[in-house]
Amino acid sequence: MTWQVLVHGPLARLDERVSRALVDTVPRPLSELGADLGNMSVALPVLACAAAYAVGRGRWRAALYAVLAMAAVPLLVVPLKEWTGRPGPLEPWAHGYYPSGHTATAMVAYFGAAFLVSNRLVPVAAALTAATGTGLVLRGYHWPLDVVASVALCLPLLRWPVLVARYGPGVRADPRE
Image (tube, rainbow, N blue to C red; front, side):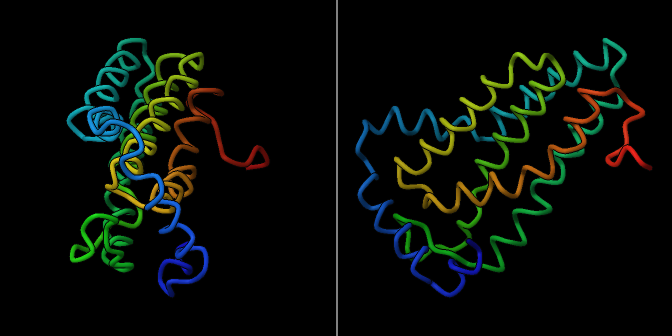
């Protein structure tokens, strides 16, 4: 995906056509509501509350991994935004839209919170992340590939919180270690 964005290849051109067909196909307040779920002022308090809950239940290491995963989001997303310099759907003069920081924030915060509180909340995290990405695309804040790239980028970030949530604090990535 990144290569296609950098060279403005066929996938990036298809992405732009799809985006133009989707922008403003739903009322703006609805798409903005979805997009706002990825704001740090919305997503971070959710993760903070879940981390506090986990610490209160003696799961401080799981909370630490989830918080560290969230801290890694800007460290990964910002350099990619700078490197690709992709313009926005509605702001062709502005650059730095690939990958979507809001989608990355939503995904890591909501899935991290779900893993800390209860695995039964994973579908809620998925729905909130999907609503964020969909809102960003429908409102015209991001191209669809920006959102997909963020999901792909964040899957490895969630590896440690998932393993710790499922198997406990002494877990190793490779059971042979």
